[in-house]
Image (cartoon, rainbow, N blue to C red):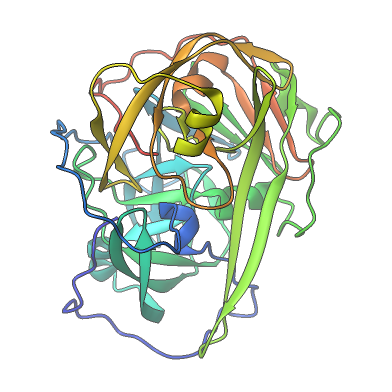
Length: 372
């Protein structure tokens, strides 16, 4: 996301009131991969072909079909869902298991969302930016109502997704207990709502979730520890909850803890891991966009067969760039799209994978940006 223009006519207030509902939001560090290190000099921005994301539902009125099954569009790996806020929309949101929920600042201003905190300065990869927080009481994805929540508000200036209105992150998705992503059928199936995750969720042992229909066409692939971190910002006592699913990728004798990130275009490793594995770069260094719109330098490497739990991944080209603290890389859509359907079981800390049918062609065929 880009810097917010502070002159926008927002109404702010101190303190936090959420009609008795526990407020859960994700720290900006999760959405954008923020780190505590000082910003570095930005590399030259890559040339990106801007594309218009599909808005495929006619209105915010209830559509035919089950409420738990949300239509999505797969745009070269990027998962787009239509979100309504109040009675306005629908708006295209990126479904991002590696990030937190956010609405673009221009949309927040247009909808007159009630800001409850901000601005707060954050560092996102190599970019400085500011965020606010807004309270949303009535909103939905597809036919499914979402719980009242306080979400991040920040400028989204994605060079590749010109009309991206927001991000639906793991802080919101995890409240359903489990989510099933079918890249082939282009559906997002939400599990029975289970409420907030505990802070001690660990990888499970391969048991079937409460709603076994979510596992249809999949099999247990890997434990998926879920990091749940709560923080309180002063002076407004704003509670932040970071939810990040992680998996272990095995490359030879190395065991790498990776963020499971449907919002990332490709698998990316930290430079320290590349050095540890003794990989030689291929081609010239390039640039990509991290955190949606922050240009970063990227080197590329070939990685031989790797194991994701009990699933062997073929040789692939991965990127390498700065990775925020917490994990040593991200496992992106470039891998997951070939293992559809994907079941992310937040409650039991487990990842289920399918047989890997290719996604059906989308009306939008432009390439997904390399969000790392």
